[in-house]
Image 1 (tube, rainbow, N blue to C red):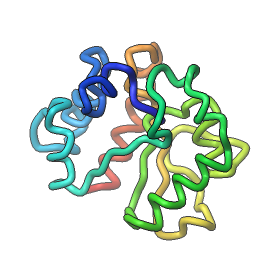
Image 2 (image 1 turned 60 degrees about the horizontal axis):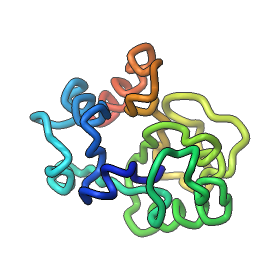
Image 3 (image 1 turned 135 degrees about the vertical axis):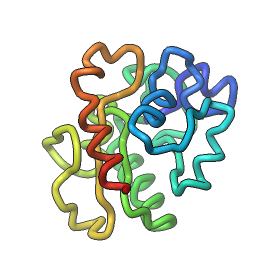
Image 4 (image 1 turned 30 degrees about the vertical axis):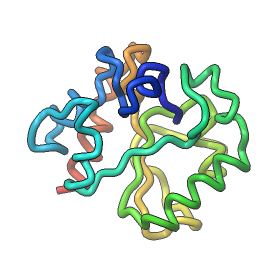
Length: 152
């Protein structure tokens, strides 16, 4: 949703060593080898782009004011989807209410989301956060596996 403080400081996505993002991509075979934060731009070679819904704040999601601004989140998401037209977009966590705000929906479950009229050509996935603060991640890893299966 927004960069963590370490990621913002180092200028790379998922730079906190305790975050399971890079390990997860490797474990579920989305990438051919295990990447690390400094390799984040190499993901484009595999059709994977990374971004944050909130660009001008960093820290824990609960502290990011921009994640509560519904109109800003909707505009940012729509801009990304119009510009890049991805086959799928995956949110790494629910970010409190941020993903609900961005999608303009009231309910959100893990995994592939129902068809969204505003994004008819894009699969929308909401995946358990890879943050080390998510103690339930291992119980929810199957959602990441389903995303990987949709890509092969």
